[in-house]
Image 1 (cartoon, rainbow, N blue to C red):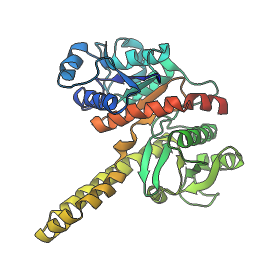
Image 2: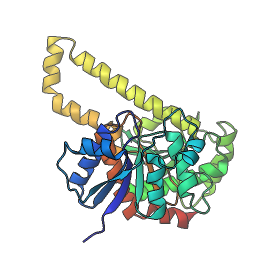
Image 3: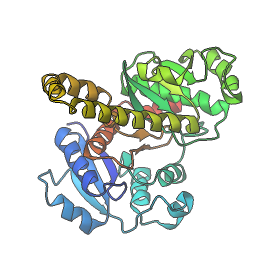
Length: 332
């Protein structure tokens, strides 16, 4: 029998905690027999919420943590002072080997700081990046970095490209993934100082499939599988991507409900439209792994609902089974 992957989940983190977090954990263990979840947070609150579900009691356990880290706290100070917070307790479970991975919709700063301070970086990794999978016309692409390193150096971006290639090939099954650097034009001489310095370094690498620059307008079409940038640019791309997607879906629904004729058309095209919109639903890909750590840390959106939590937990299985940490360690 295959060993179950244990995922420590921050039950108290996020806008919809603990209800949606716990629901997502239950869905994950119902969908996958090789997952065991440790819900970390206020024990009485978690048990009260769990009481409304039917689930395998041996595959969901509760680990008590009385404190919580909010978004307005200093991440480093909070990690050092709040030893009994859900984030710190869960990260220590990964460090000690009690859990194989950690998932949180809580404070991004605390998750990033805690990942590096408690779990630590793989030897050779300069800066761990956050790498979310984003939907495109061609399937999906990996955006790396989207929020961890706003003042990156060329050597950091080179490592982002390597780690992103490993992740895309082994977790999403994209063979020889195309790697591109975000730029304001396709020409090699375009860009700011960081891009101009990084471009030739990426071009020289023989262990990635570097295809050059990619402009923001080409990202939704899937012109590259791994999109490399520093975190300021990456976060702007991600937030605009999500906001525009939501706005377009709302306008489409508004238009379809505007007249009797459009309502009839909407009814006739409902299944096809639902399938199309689902392809651009970012929650189906789970959260963003913090690549380059000694253990797996996955950060989901603060507004995550149960489906995204479920998928974030499930993606930890593939990450662990494909030995992404070991492959990054070997490559770098």
